[in-house]
Amino acid sequence: MFIHTFGPVAIQIAFAIGMALFLLIFTNAIGPKKYNPVKFDTYECGVSYFNDARGMFNVKFYLIAVIFILFDIEAVFIIPWSVIFMEFKKLGLGLFILGEMAVFLGVLVLAYIYIIKKGALKWD
Amino acid sequence: MEEWIIDILISLAKTLAFFGVILLWAAYITLGERRFASFFQNRLGPNRAGIFGLLQPLADGIKFMMKEEIIPKNANRAFYLLGPTLFITIALIPWAAIPFGDTVVIAGREVKLQIVDLNVGILFMIAVSSIGVYGIMIGGWASNNKYSLLGAIRSSAQLISYEITMGIALAAVFLLSGSLSTRDIIIAQMQSPWHWNVFVQPLGFIVFFVSILAETNRVPFDLAEAESELIVGYHTEYGAFKFAMYMLSEYINLITASALITLLYFGGWGIPFVDLGRLGLSVNLAGLISVIVFLVKTGFFVFVFIWIRWTLPRFRYDQLMNLGWKILLPLALVNLFGTAVVALLV
View 1: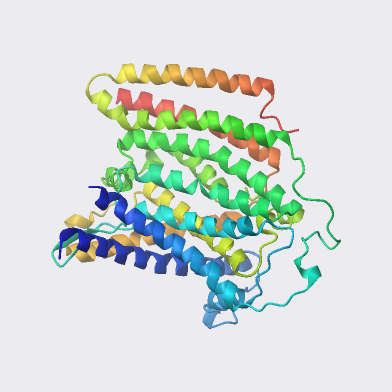
View 2: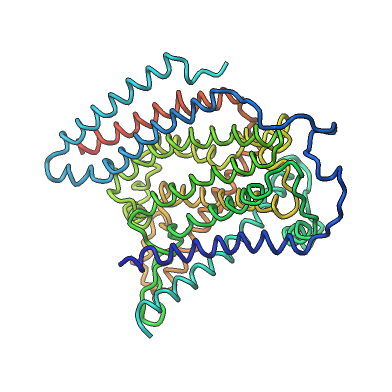
């Protein structure tokens, strides 16, 4: 039944959002408010700020994000495989399902070696 | 009353009780961390408010509320407010699937001590908690501060890197239990302490523990905060209660991580060599004991996290990335494949 499984989850999510909004609005309402132009400047270790912060950053981070997507999809395939593994073993198909995963992980490991050889994970 | 209305009322009660407990607990971890830090460093720590400083979290909370809320003029207002709000919302949701005890019987109804027993429990928790990255990224970007942005980018790269190793380490646990339900995983470990996954899967446990340490942004993986180089990282520009929201969520995540370790690797509410069902206790008393056992185990792992924080130095960023991608990932894969081979042979 949907209401017995995801009904309580919906309640939990509603409470969590309500709680966060309450904290945000309530605490904003009771604090003092005094305007001062310097106070609203961006923090910069004692000197006045310069430039916009949103400049360039190391491309490695972007590369990590791309590799993450690939490997996370591998994890998405591995998890259902691991959940049904024992049932296949009971049916006598254990070696088959293990072989399937061996092929899959083999491809994954090849890709992994390629990534390392290319130096995508190298931080100088 | 109709059946489903009663069910909804019960889950409402459980949710309310959970919010009370978790917020109080997270608040007191702040005190616990400061006190233990002091003891590790041979000083006393906050002990002025109340006996042993027990009122300190309350004093901190009131202070945070009375402070002026500042939104820097260069910040993106909407996203600046969205960051902490999203982060604390996401921190609170995964607990819907964590079983904090066995069952009790109230007015002839069997009530599971868990907000809901999802058949995809762990998957739900991982899926929700990985959204937390957005809370950090949005907050850091919206502040328009160099330190915040650097902290947020580092933190995001770290969180997504360690998520993979965590997922693959968990797959080996699912392989043994044949289920994603948190309750089933605990029940599969109930027979004896030697069935606890920490003994069945020692390598998997190490990989998982290191990953979860990185996922919660704790020392030695607190590169996002790294106060010696980045002030405090992604929440540099946050003050008053919005800062407290970030801190509170980090501590809630810490409790969630400890609860995950308890239920996945340390047998949940099981007491070593004692079978609660066979002691002849009433169902409700056994349920109460199970809750206490679960909370004690979780509390112990919270203490371990604090202990590690004040014992180990911080990694360098390249070391952190190398550890995640070049050591833990192959280890997790070896562990998964080895588990599958052994499970096939046994």
